Length: 455
Image (cartoon, rainbow, N blue to C red; front, side, top):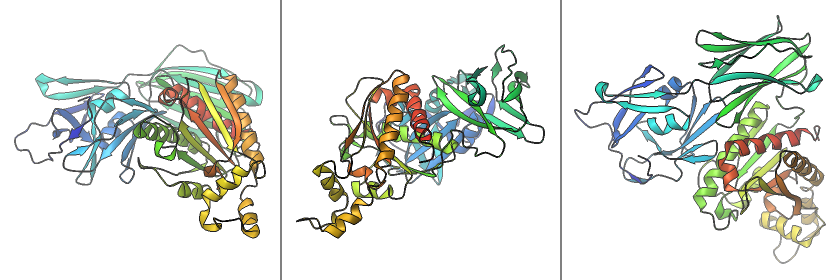
């Protein structure tokens, strides 16, 4: 069922309807049913995700379900009505790119996922076996390779998989060993590696999976995170001195970022449809949030659902934040971005108007009281941070082949609450849909911030 439209949830009251057996990578998953939507097999979210090797997060208030398998993120709109409903478009998104399929359903206190849509979004094959009245989902077995990047204190190991997969890490400080287990992955022929931060790294097949063992050099601590890469993912192992801060991307001394997913009703994408901008920017924010969580940074979102949020509320969330990023769609070609930062407080009279738009309740509309003006302008104390962060980002993206317009100063009210410690980004819809481009931008945002050196 590829067309998202009016769905009729008929419940679990059908009598005498055979329920299909669901097999995921050969494992029986109970509770599959075709009685929720005609001709569509649904399965309970928790059991289905477990069989896939994925983590599932059900956000009833935000109206979505998020599945994470390695670095792959699949999001589904969550329909709560038990009568005729209109499912949001797109209902299924992987790494910011819309895919065909129906929404997830919430019924009797439990989320149900469309089996075919989820299986195919994760790169798997889904088939109905008529002779056994069963549905089979088979995810691809990732192929695993290993390479060494950088040198000296900046070297890191990269484990590349051509399909998403679950992995776990085990660090044994007493023996200086880091083990990584990549479930169901097939190791490619890769020679053992040696480096300055580690003595030896090797990969071997163990009981149908791949295991990597890294013997660390004395006094070295590992840091591990994963990022999307094409249709697969990369697991990065970086190294630092024992006892040093263990953020995967260092140095990052800040603890709270505010992420603002733009919406056409907030003036972002012009002629683009509201649901397109709203869903794509929200998916990018989720991708960026994963990068930040891996760096030990707390994240707050100005918008978790599809509805727009008033400008004053979004701006207020930035007060006290260490950084803020607001993302919108723009009429741009691929791999091109526009970048704005809050302009200097006395650079233009329009900035004063922008601040007043953000804090009308604190100002007299007919004029600006000197004391109130002074209080407001104290919010704008870190304008240089935004400018330098933007310059770092522009350089990083330029080196990766992007064309960046900016950073340009502008009187943007949404950034005033964060005291100028923020960036306003415009990207093309194609780049937000492309997990490679979106992931590249997310990583560049964090590394450009890290380059500020704890300011």
